[in-house]
Image (cartoon, rainbow, N blue to C red; front, top):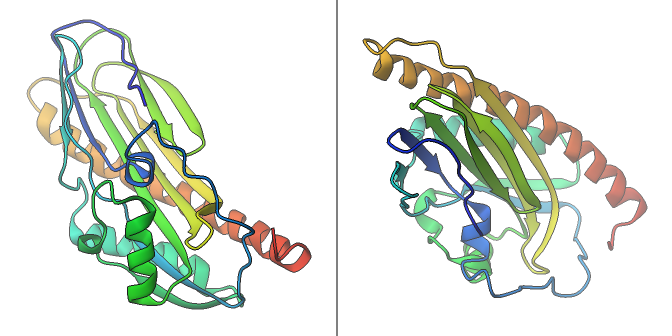
Length: 237
């Protein structure tokens, strides 16, 4: 998977992200096909977890910093996972919800890691939450490609812009098949001066996560409703 960037050299772009693509498909040359029919046993047992952090990269002569540590604190991640769990709890086809600690997800662990989690927690479906946040702090037009499990989102950026994407991808562990996904995005336009740049970027980062998570949770509620209808009409698909 290729990260596409364009713009003027000499600026700074800071990125914090966790990637479902890199976690489930660590070798881009490998293709992991679904295994058989997705036959769900209702009510389902659901696990919810954050995808592990990804590695650092450089792009051209412009420093492009990426964080392997989470941009969100443990408390913020827990609150967000609880919001995701609330959406699942309101449906009768869900038996139980397990919030999986981040430590149990191995970076680039792929479906082997999901099999271990499924056996450990007794879940057959898992909701993987990931995020991608980039803050541009250089002059000139830039662009960023968000890689997701179903394709890429290409967005423009400018000085002090903060782009955030949060995504929940729900998988049936045994069949290795994605059931549905729910993304949420945010764009905070830069408005700070050099004097208060660091403080403003921190505030923009927090606001970006808040807006993206609100939209993701709203989309998740819609997708769960559609999934319930699919279970009622085509339970073996």
